[in-house]
Length: 598
Ligand SMILES: Cc1cc2nc3c(=O)[nH]c(=O)nc-3n(C[C@H](O)[C@H](O)[C@H](O)COP(=O)(O)OP(=O)(O)OC[C@H]3O[C@@H](n4cnc5c(N)ncnc54)[C@H](O)[C@@H]3O)c2cc1C
Image (tube, rainbow, N blue to C red; front, side):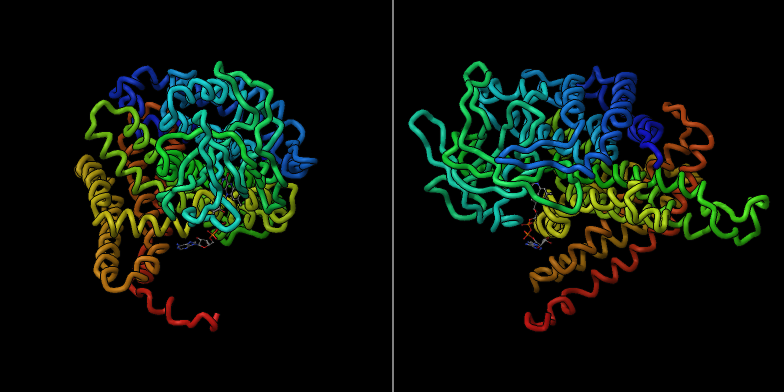
């Protein structure tokens, strides 16, 4: 099996040449010290961690899985040591609040690191991602006292965090959760309830686990507006932020046996009058949790991209070496019995589809991350507000489209290897299993599509789309004199026309039939994803065309980007036409069947 190689060339090219991070970070005082050189050094180091620390325990972790005995969870061999090295390397604090021991780095930087971690070892990455999300929520909404007590050790990686939302009867519809919180005289709360599917709910990597738990106060309103957020430590912590030796009333009841990410512990967590502390305002817990969700959802898209890239690397190398059949144009290797399967157009179709979507998805993820950074660091309040709106529009698409394309790429990679892709040895079947969950958790992709279509498009009356349009207009204006860009700008223009037509169809119909929103939503998300990938590819090609090449990319690399870009425009983009036709067909055929006819 080909060893995972960190895609440093792509990353440097996207960060420096496409998104010009040097200039972006220099324009914001809090990121002014994050220079291209610093980014480059950190990314290279992270690449070594992914290749040398995480990838070597990926397959063995999958084969061994986690162990559950009497309420304790043991991670597979090598995970504890790898986690210790990861934490000691300072990786847990990368984006954290500088006032509590974090390094205050931008999301664009951590996004590429996350992608590499997911590619190398998705199960391992989840322990770290959940901690990052929990620290982010705490630093955004927790009191100073809570931050002082918990953040330093979470940033140090001595403790990890979880997010405890899901209950047996409440997954997408969190308004139905039953976990209760009862106020105590000392200002704390007692939390009681059962949470399921909790990633990293219990494990042996750290001395403490800090759960962020959604629960309802006794007088809470029904539904989503009656949910509060609580911090519940596994072991209680004294005022100075040290363990006081008291085990809290929270325990792992079991772990799930599942399709993939087998080395990630997915836990049933029982809270039995566990001592917890309110985070943020009472009854506003879901909104607080959503701060974390935008980051977590971005991470899921990165999981899709990462596993797609790992699959591509294995499949591309295999296709160059595996000899079967002859090229249609005559033998390429006359001294051998057959040619490498890379000569076959259909094998190239699979590899190019993977590569085009990996680069499009990586660029879209960085674009969304750049907006998260602007919304966090920009000194101008109007710029921050605009970026927040773009984040709201981009994240559901990035999450759903990148995870769908990611899973598809893993399956294509498996297909390139034929039967060898189906057996465990080459790692492709593990990637397929590991990638599948990203389409489901952090809000199933169907629900992301509904969020995009319903809240972010119809209810926002097109305001968010107008902001995106402004961004695209600005880019197009910057390229209008470049003759070689004309075909790509024309393709982008056509995409935008289709998206505008789809939007006006749904806006017009939704006032008459509420089912039109849900009926259009998935195809609309895909059309938007395709349009955004087209925008990203146009930006990639413009950067190649610009040619100054601060990342120092070589001519062959630049040429390959042009060829992949042309493949994307000619072979993948036409799908937009059928998506528009699906949307235009409306809700009727979906709703025609009676329940008993299913
Ligand atoms: C391995 C794993 C790890 C996880 N980690 C965590 C974790 O750390 N913390 C946590 O809290 N949860 C976690 N989850 C839970 C995960 O986020 C949920 O499974 C997911 O949000 C979907 O909820 P559900 O499974 O109850 O599906 P349901 O909500 O029952 O949905 C089932 C189907 O119906 C569709 N659907 C539901 N409602 C609508 C609607 N209104 N409109 C259209 N379609 C709809 C969905 O898209 C889906 O296809 C994890 C799950 C797994 C499997």
